[in-house]
Image 1 (cartoon, one colour):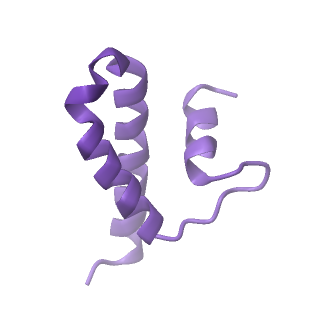
Image 2: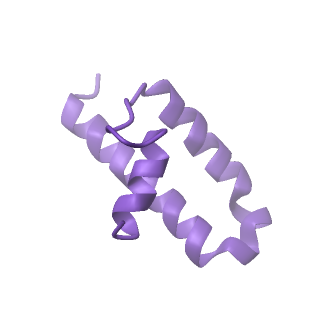
Length: 68
């Protein structure tokens, strides 16, 4: 069984990976879309609450990574 720290690190790494794929490799979406879909499904199973002021954890991560 994974501990909370491992899960939190996995969530952070997944959010970062999705952001990199969407921003740096947007023109190659057809190559990574299936992996991103799997990552999205995994994130959904983690039931991560959205921080205040954001619709979901992905929106929050994007804002943090873009410095907004």
